[in-house]
Image (cartoon, rainbow, N blue to C red; front, side, top):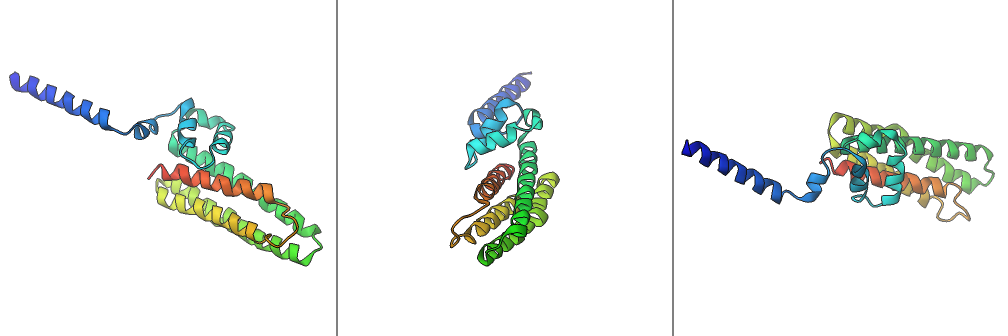
Length: 181
């Protein structure tokens, strides 16, 4: 009987020690709820964009970190697809050869984002392999950067705002997926 009580007390002491020394950030990232979005977004480079993007989706209220990563990839795909459509429309009316060349390059970058980078990130999150999700989202951010560099010598960058959102949202998604590692 004394052995049973001793083992029980030892077990309780061990559990209490484990809980008290578990980092708060690790405890915060388990579960769901309204604070999950804020807690997760605090760990990203663009807090306001993160909160805005995630809270605009009703799934976020009950999502865990993996669910928030999925929502982020969905938002990224929608914004990148819209930006690609914008580039395509601008290409049809552009007269300046240098502008056309920069837009064609951006179309190539955005095709890579939409057809390769984002699907890799989505599949990685879905299948529970976050390493490839981080890589896919990071690649999308790099492609958006490359698009922007193509306008370095242009008098105006007609897709600046959309390109920035795609870049920043890619960084947010990469940060959220990184939390799953």
